[in-house]
Length: 212
Image (cartoon, rainbow, N blue to C red):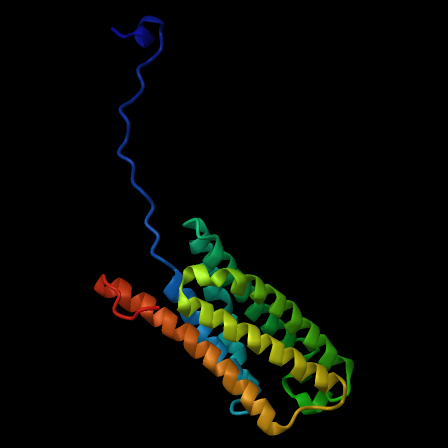
């Protein structure tokens, strides 16, 4: 007889075997969602594709999927990746909402030349530049690949802010400049895709096959 039963209390049941919750890294999922959607955004900004292709991607892969990846990362205790994925997932959802609302004409710079909409979009891209800059300052701890992604993304938001400010001021940039900005954005997406591919490959083979 134990002390517990002597005092009229039941013994504690045997401890159940703990079963940890297994969560795979969401880095590949988040980076692929961000990278591929960003590449389409660059192609659209440069005038190579129509915005409709980008909008569906921004809603599902760039937006919803990155949100899921971010929640998983936060669940695993990764503040940097979790906040970034949820943040940019929200960016793509907001971007989709922006272009499918009354500001739908924003997809065509020529149609809003000299209107306040250009300044609105410039403000939108500027606050995302600020968000991105915060991550750029902390990215070096996570390797050269992630640092490169945030560096080029910071530059992309600066360029987009200038681009749409000029549209609002009725002095839009040349077609060649739009294509150059679009190419920089595509490169940003490619870098994110590369880091995502490295994360997947290194995990799959259990060693650093692609150093990032």
